[in-house]
Length: 319
Image (cartoon, rainbow, N blue to C red; front, top):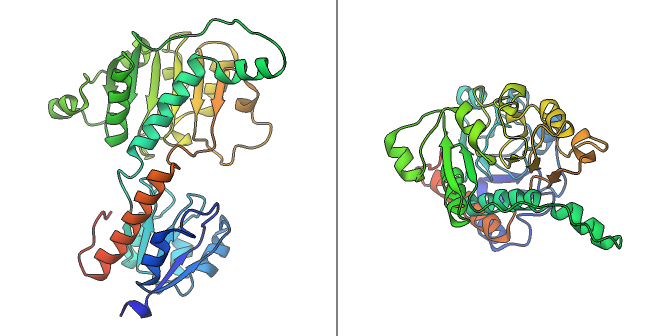
């Protein structure tokens, strides 16, 4: 049975699966086809998936639209390497009987560590001072310590919970906000849930850890940004669309907030010459918070587990 299953990876660029032990594991499950380039054009993606029974989605630039799914009548299982599935039309998948699974939790530590790193890099002006030293200067601009400051965590999932723990480890006071606050979740978080306006007002660092949805899209806009302290730092390792980028750039340009550490953007890669890329009080990374070796291997193992469970008739980590 397994030999009849065609498993297609349409977007292994840069290489995540190729050359790993999980590649061998997947080849034992069926006919594995790996493309070593991206497929952001839906028509290209449809061609690559034409004969697929299972597809492993590595990169969020691959858009599994209703049109793409209609062009792939044999497709029965989409496995997303990652937590977010906003690039997959879940309604169309349900209508067509296509199972969608993901790999929740595989990158919890990696993303939370990256968020802390961004906050520290902005607070310590690492990029600016690195450039100065390399250019023979010896800048002595004031820098900020996070110990004793307030960390506002927006989102109470596994990554948000880990971020709260890391913040406490730095000696920060942690407060939180979520769409669905309960006493039980607050206890698990180890932090009180506040109203969003209050969190934005009192926090020295605000870190975003929400999935993208109709409710979270544009959550951080000109109004919420206006509540932040003039020296506060915004960190986004979640999804770019949670933040109104124009409003953020304006707030940064006018020194209405102290800085930002960003790993996610409305358009990825970030366009050359983008206004955020011209600001000294911003640290940018290429949406790679989850791309540690450890998280990558665990995520791939979970991909293989999802396919194996599906083949056995007991699907897991489903939507």
